[in-house]
Image (spheres, rainbow, N blue to C red):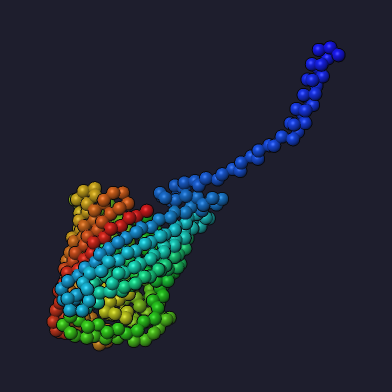
Length: 381
């Protein structure tokens, strides 16, 4: 065998071995495709598509820490402390998708609260502008509703929840119900009506700072009680207007609010007039109107800088003390204060509010005055 034959034979053998090894080679599996979350900008910032669907979802919320305080007639003689802290965490989920009937919306807002102490107060509106409440934990569904083609059903805030920017006014009480609502919205004009379940109540005793005791006339538990809430409003140029009213089937009482705002100078001027026919809840406040027969409120939201907003506010309410039948009878109240909002950094802000309150009980005798307010830190996301 010559060298040429040996080389050819060796090459053939190597080819056979190489072919066999190639047949046994391990082939790596192809990686599965990853479906990344896509931004959904059709409904504003913060929305993203739920993978595999055409539904857009937004997750948001805030963390809030308050320290409330009060001193004067509504706080000094109650045997308790006159300050308390409060922590709140809220997490909300908003879902939206297009349908043949318009945008289908779903909202869930979960809220957890912890108050460090209980501060007993007296007076018709004692403790109204502070975050002071009952001590302990609570986890609640603040809102949970579905909305399509102007119809809304679930648990949500009524039009009465649209408070002024400042923290000195007292214009509404319970504003969050299980309800059904329809709203026609044409952009510069809207009109809507809602049917709300007010729930059962029982009577309550309130002792004023002068020692006078009143018992609210509501004394029955009527779980079938309903409320009717309606609102119209709109805007033209720099002006925005709104009228809303509520009627309680249980007490056959109601209240109406008319308000208007306008951009003037470096801020916004806003005013409101509220009328209530009488008591329609278990306290000396209503589910709709808050404190008396006639209420007048005005505030000016001054945009001092890009970060600082100062809002002075004043309120007068007549006939704050009811008679035994639940009809507004006598007395009056003044509230005046200011709220300061400061943006520390993006999504972190602070709010400080202080309010002077004077209640005169007219023919019921006596009066009371006090100062109350709070300091707040809030991180939004």
